[in-house]
Length: 160
Image (cartoon, rainbow, N blue to C red; front, side, top):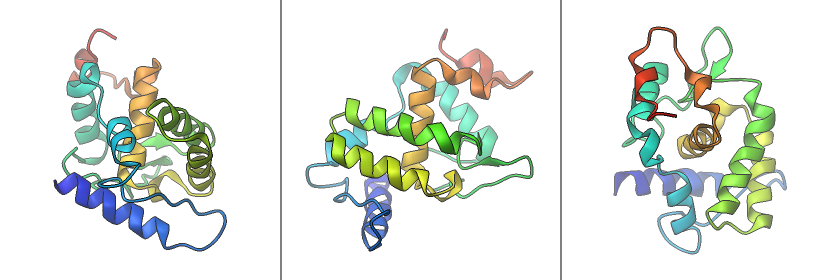
């Protein structure tokens, strides 16, 4: 219930921007977007333990509070809940677009999401969109992005 309220509030805030570069969708907690947004933002079972460990280590975030750690930016230019290198700002929006389409979002809406994401630094993305990027990266084999030397998280990658 709480994640739905947070997601709804974030999406509603995004929807109030008037520029053509801004992206808006209906609240994911209701309407046509609810199922695919919720599913795209759900942690893949195979990576659940790994993702929880990485999220706690990188930003102190958790899955119950989607905005926790979302605005983080450290001195070495790693941003957001998952501490992506700021360079991910270029390819990351395309990965989010692909995941949203795969989970059912119409291509024109997914394109709007990509355009909006491309115009904003990762630490300004809503936490649930940062999660969508992280899970897409993990499922496409990029979980090693978070391969942390000596970290116990590495052993939790689910045999990836």
